[in-house]
Image 1 (tube, one colour):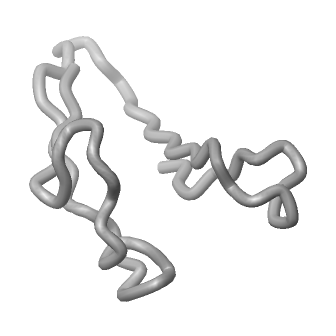
Image 2: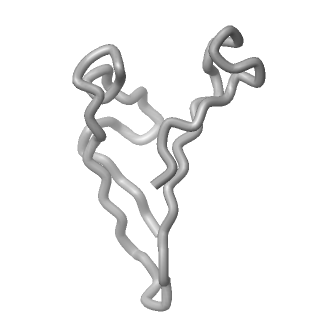
Image 3: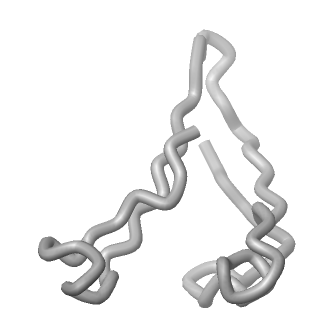
Length: 65
C-alpha cells in the first residue's frame, strides 16, 4: 500500500496551512496499491515531539481515521 500527498514532500514537514496555526484543514492524501481483500483502513497520525507541558510523554495523536 502507498500513501501519498500533493500537499508536502515525502519526509518533509506538513505546511502550516494544515495546522492549528492556520486553516487547520486536512492535507490531500491518496491511497494506492491496496490489496483487493482489504476490508478496512486505519490512519493514525502521531506527533512524536509535542512539548512536554502539553503531553508528558511527548506524543500526541492528531488523527485517528
